[in-house]
Amino acid sequence: MQNSFAEKMLMLDEGFRSKPYYCTEGFATIGYGRKLSDIPKTPLPNIVTNKDDERKFMKERINEIIGRFIAHKLKAWNNCNIQQQAVLISMAYQIGVTGVLKFNKMWIALEVADFRKAADEMLDSKWAKQTPNRARRLANTMRVGMIDDYYLMQGNLL
Image (cartoon, rainbow, N blue to C red; front, top):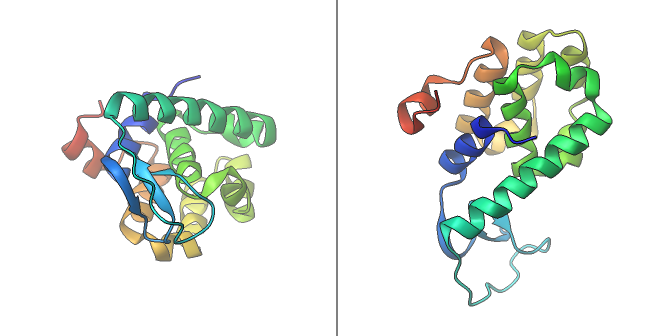
């Protein structure tokens, strides 16, 4: 169930840090955006990680996300190509599957393969206001069904 587009997109969007840090929402985080605590401003633990371990975690998380989307939104999921599925995975990696499932109008648009409307609904959200550049890139990928040029230039995704 792996999605290599999602993995490469996440590596670029999240970046890697071997030591804990606070994300923009104040959560203790490490590696490629792996949240260490669900409580903001929890003291940072004194730990170190490496890229190999964090990529393993990311792959496991991607597989979990895919399984949950297949279980909850199979028709919409199947209407998306692999790059558009990578967009949904990236969103869920950032805000959780539950958070993405709340994008009701986006899912309705995906059910009928209206990717332009789905992209518009992605951008009409608190998530898009919090991470506007990432949201714009992901919405563009959803809209056209091809990886945004940013990812192509930065990470050789093809």
